[in-house]
Image (cartoon, rainbow over all chains, first blue to last red; front, side):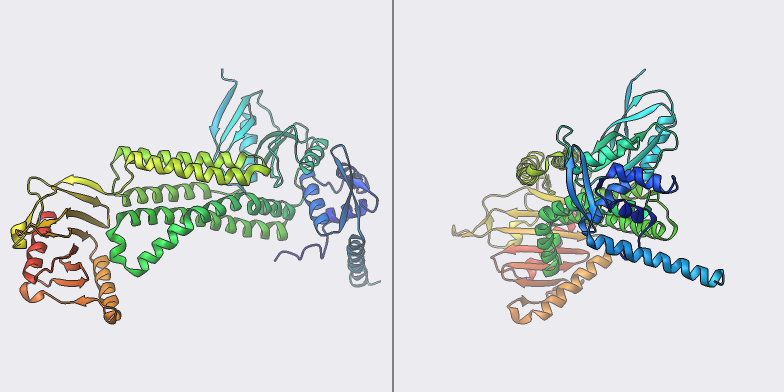
Length: 104
Length: 432
């Protein structure tokens, strides 16, 4: 069964939203994600474009300006909430792992 | 050696990875995609090479290179930054090529890829077909279904009904097949993407199956037209299909702001063209045949006191695998006293399937019984025959079930059972 939209985030969604805490465009995001993850996570341009459209439609991010062919976006309050929830969820997962697997 | 070559490449709209594989295989043989026009792909000759292709759909596409949609420009810019160059575009279908080694794929999230394909299907591919189907088919379909439900005998009495019905049903079946194929693929693709992280799976053998179904349905429609072996008619059918296809593809290539108006204009113009084309090629499913020297198969002597002024030696003939149908008419009778009587016409339908014939008869009887109070007169003339001749009279129409045939006589003359028996015998002997 497909997950409910944006209730949980994939790695790529997570990093894209982190990038958008500051205003930036798609090409910047691709570079930043690669850098942030030391090349472990790559976002393809097709995926990135579609995710930016979906985030924008859901008001998770908002469009800010266009320079040449580049459009810039920034995270909205709703987007920050989603990112925060995802962070807490991941934290819960790691805590549970520590608790039950490592006995801490 | 040719520098370019065209190939017919048949892929489902959503089979982007099937297209990718094909493009990469062609590149290894030294043929790089140059441009795409529907199913005709043009390749240009280059050195054989291992290059990566990626095929995607971009719903808000623009065909204008000079003024691409802002989103499209951004998308292409992002692709270019990752080494993906636009190699070809046909409407929402975008083909990218990457000459680099191990490039970041264009699509890195399977679920997003499948969602994007689905979005393109809903906004582009399906919507065009649905609108075309609704506009062109809904009214004739409703009318045909109502006629069929109201009176099946009357329905098959007009072969045009059957032909139109089969064409409409063929279109709807093909549309439904494509839709079902797509939904099955989508369900499988989404599950695989969500649970196993697989990208859009290659679609195998769906398109050929759909094409086979289309050809079978087209042949069925031609068969039901009663003109299976008429080259002129066949030419007319294929020209009509070619015209419709041409109109469809041109409409798709128009710019967005003018698409709606142009679409309406195209429908009107194509309807007019089709009308004249149909008129020119004699699209009517009925064929006029000469039945010999004897003018009317029902001689006037057998209708007693009448003489005829204007015999017609021809009758119309229609044949298909379900039934044969013959129709003849007499302009008018003239009595000895010079009094003109209304037209006399007959339709003889020989049903080739016993089951179908019995169903028609049973259905007619059922309707007759349930409509006894609706003014339908009825009598049986079986006492005059060894075999049962079931005759029903509704105003000036006599409907007779005899052997494996249905005979419909239309005249304002009151026929006696003896006259009916003579007519039935003559007609059945002549045609069956």
